[in-house]
Length: 200
Image (cartoon, rainbow, N blue to C red; front, side, top):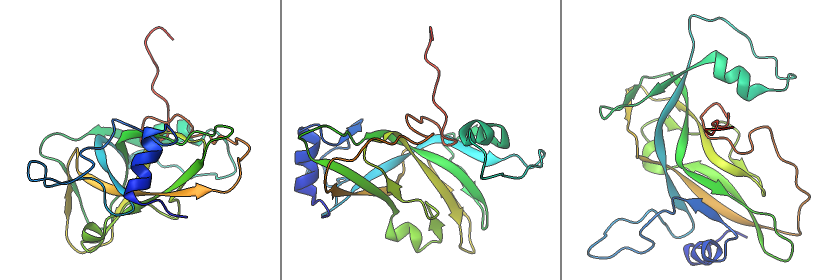
């Protein structure tokens, strides 16, 4: 069952879905004609962090190995977008992540939700892909959402910090799942690593 915008509001208010900072406004008005909520989704924004493949450091991925977030941190170069944005040329692949942190708690006796991250149709028509075969955000996940972005078009696309880049669609999970955290649990960077806090 896919949640409507009204059901998303209710789940956020109940703490069954947590998005920080919470997207606003919920409803369109004359004062706020734009809302990140559609009939059954909510838009999330692109952070200023991007990870670009390090061309000077040849490597190959061994997908059997654990610790992929740390390897990605070495294989990719972190870059911060400025106010001028970042030009995604045709064929270029970069990792980004959302400004918002998403949490899908598993709590006994409470509804449990999973989500899917999808691109936006207007951007897709320009050739922008925001995920590759990995749209699922599992119940119990907490962290920012990594975006695997590729320009499949023939023309460059300029990305900007704060751009509403993707949408989340929420689904009700039948039954209470046993927690099975991935290595990306708590991620705060496009590569999937966690930010170290001061004093730790």
